[in-house]
Image (cartoon, rainbow, N blue to C red; front, side, top):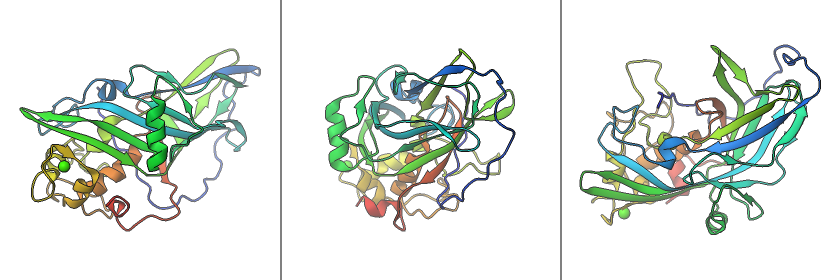
Length: 310
Ligand SMILES: [Ca+2]
């Protein structure tokens, strides 16, 4: 598993981005090609996030296994450098990335052979009319709709003889834009469709990000971003929680974070819950380790993320 860096969390509204670059047709081929979008939770969500050195797994000895990783995708959009939309998903898609394998998000479609530099998507509240793909359970979609969730994770963490379960439903509304990946040492924005070719974009979800100890990568390389669960586990224990073995979001929202261990990176957070809710916006990625700019979509956001979860 390669080391990851955190996607920037942009909590302010983004100014429109000026178009830039060339005419966006490096393929110069004419004709058209086929475009596919898939999603995958990688080994971390399918199998386990093990104990490790902080970057390869939990620094404090925990291991996490997901039973559900439910994602509500909306508005998957492919546009060119001038903003002309070549494709936009008409119906939302519902998927469970705890199910094994890479899942097709929609049927393959054709696009003109050229660079499509602007790929974006949303993870927003699940919709009853969503297309259920990849073997996801329609009952889980109904649960998401009923509770107003956009993302829901369920699983267990173990350390020695201790097991803590979790069922966390997130209501965050997040837009992922300017999706890009490092290719041959450069950041390639969006996708390149070639004449007769097939291009596949994976909207990868990173299950480890919920357990990071900082909200943005530190400019100081000595300050590592690491995976931790001790504080989350302690949120279930007295005096913060009810000790029933289940770490709930309200319990996380009661638990102040240790500033010696957790770095809010300048964001307004007071509890471990605020960390986890903010980090829920960073699970969305592009083509494996590729990144997108993260933009919250809520018209109103509370002073602290937990204010909507107590
Ligand atoms: Ca509990």
